Length: 139
Image 1 (tube, helix red, strand yellow):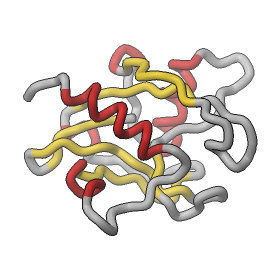
Image 2 (cartoon, helix red, strand yellow):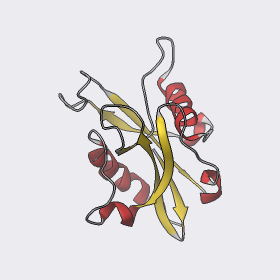
Image 3 (cartoon, one colour):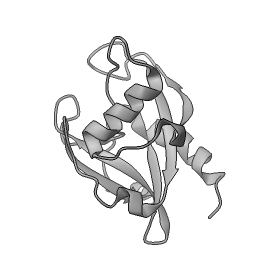
Image 4 (cartoon, helix red, strand yellow):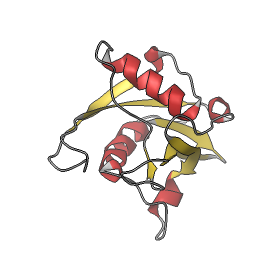
């Protein structure tokens, strides 16, 4: 999960899912680990594949693990979430790639409005936890 500044406000980078489940819904960038891949390396790889954003592993902090039964209709899935706070210019050239149809930074205020983007899976809950993390950083 990548937070940034956009138009003087905090935003978060989301991808529009290109595949089922939740095709067309917005989600946090992510995916499945390779069998011989470290957690942080998988996070960096998936972020780059889905958004074109290449971050150094040192820019990421582990937020937590999410593994509620039924959180993914494809089967039992546990997600380890990493977060970063980057300057807005870093997200200037993001683009959807791999199985992401689109990548975009949403202002956090946009996500709070009625009719805002639908978030896939339990990503709204994860985003709520991450907002507490990012709020500890002052501009």
